[in-house]
Image (cartoon, helix red, strand yellow):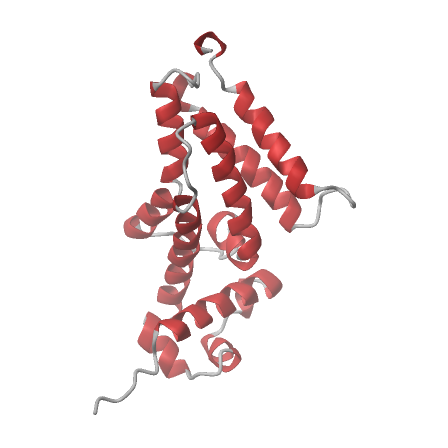
Length: 199
């Protein structure tokens, strides 16, 4: 009878989540393999077995963060109406950030000083945001959006990233209905890119 695998996917995810939590709460210097293993109830041998060492762990954390974001964006049921789909993707972006706030800074906040993703890791990050580019491209192609010089994707990402970052950092006004304000902001931003002549 084969021996059960102890270094399995569940342990990999637990280690990555704990690594993200340590970085988010205490900064990158708090991330030691010994502490990580102890917090996750495993051994440093398991960490080395799964990730090869700290650089591999950090890279995998970056890839995992974008994988989760991309999975959530890809799960959004598209309506075929680019303006509405853009808003739905923005809502899913926020939901992903709130579900994994400990990973948000790893993706976009420079939480790990000195980390530079390799080409493969970079391709994972770009693939995660592909649904946004696809909806914008569809909207431009059908005349729904006016996108001069390809700036729409950056503008739309800037809106969601800025609002989500303010929320995660606790910088929004107290008592604000964040979800409603967020969606209204997305709709206002989307309206600014509409081709009025098309409709």
